[in-house]
Amino acid sequence: MVEQSPYASLYENDPVYQMAVKQLRESASILGLSDDVVEALRHPEKLVQVKITVRRDNGKLETFLGWRSQHNSALGPYKGGIRYAETVTPGEVVALSMWMTWKCSLAGIPYGGGKGGVRVNPKTLSPRELEELSRKYFAAIAREVGPDVDIPAPDVNTNPQIMGWYYDEYSKIAGFHAWGVVTAKPVELGGLGVRVISTGYGTALSAREAAKRLFGGLEGRTVAVHGFGNVGIYTAKYLAEWGATVVAVSDSKGYVYNPRGINVEKAIEIKEKTGMVTDYREGDVKISSNHMELLELPVDILVPAAIENVITRENVNRIKAKLVVEGANGPTTPEAEKTLHEKGVVVVPDILANAGGVTMSWIEWSHNRMGCFLTEEEALSRLDKIMTINFNKVYDEWRKKYSIYPMRVAAYAIAVDRVVKAMKLRGWI
Ligand code: GLU
Image (cartoon, rainbow, N blue to C red; front, side):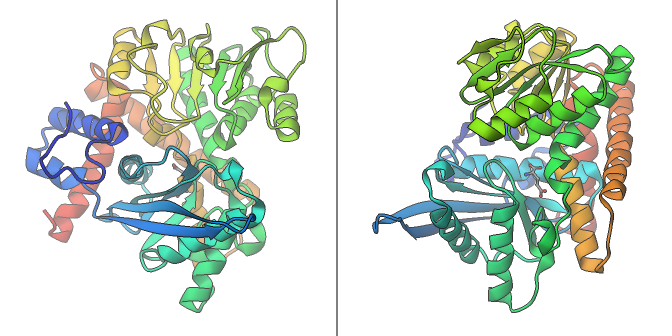
């Protein structure tokens, strides 16, 4: 159903937003939530748009638009990343902030959901221009964020260096060392080194737990990973380390496939060196320039770890994997998910599968605030415990109560219920 109103807001006609609302509505009807509660949940509490004017190295001014969406704060300060991409829209940012609300709730961490984005292709900026854009964006939203208010982090095309600039910019404006205002900071600025690997590591943990339930383990299972950025790289790395055979990886330039297995360490090395994983040339490897074809390879486990909307009505009938683990946010449309479910394919939903990043963010943030020190081993083993418990809790709830629906419904049942209870306890609804 398309959300239409005569006064459609900045985001209501956006397809990604409509997908997030559809997921919410479908779960709400199964859970018996009334329409007025859904109405209260489908809008962000606040959406700010800012203008960022940067002086390019050639002397000309260029103006970019950015947004921060604060979806729900019933459980705590808003939490969620900031992405830089030419395709960013306010609707996408609002949808992603809604998914963060469910993700944090499901993970059991004391945060609400937020997300930010700037419409820019960061690859076209020089390092100096990128720093100017980042500092100006954060200064523009400085009144909206804070260690107890809204805590950004990286997302697509942003990284610890950019978090360092945000932290510095905010600290100067606020007049104190605001370690808690962003997470995934560089280690020297209060970050945890393992935060960078955590989303991928957590996605691999979810795949490991799902594989135990479905196939008796990862050993000998074939995996294709769509997207070779921060999430895809570490998912592939750990799945290979834990006994699976990673047969295909891709980036925006195409994919590489070897049914006998890809040397993931080598692929990472190539990606770092040339920027293109398709430069990988070990053994009998097939290279294609169409990364979307990777999704249709004959594998046991498929990890979409790039962007939203890649498994759709159009290609769903060609998907051969038995298990899909969503490393990206929103890679499967609700129609496609329904078809996969009918065919017996298990989809581990994004709000469960890729919660490793935000969970490690919470570990970093709470230690910043206590002024404590934590070793990387301690942090990773804590993440392993949390993700393993959460996966199995959702899986059991699904098998017990919701098995006629996709697994996402069980995840939403737990996540939305907790948010609605908090809203009721606060007297908001
Ligand atoms: N951007 C990540 C996500 O989508 C992490 C957010 C965070 O650490 O706050 O979950």
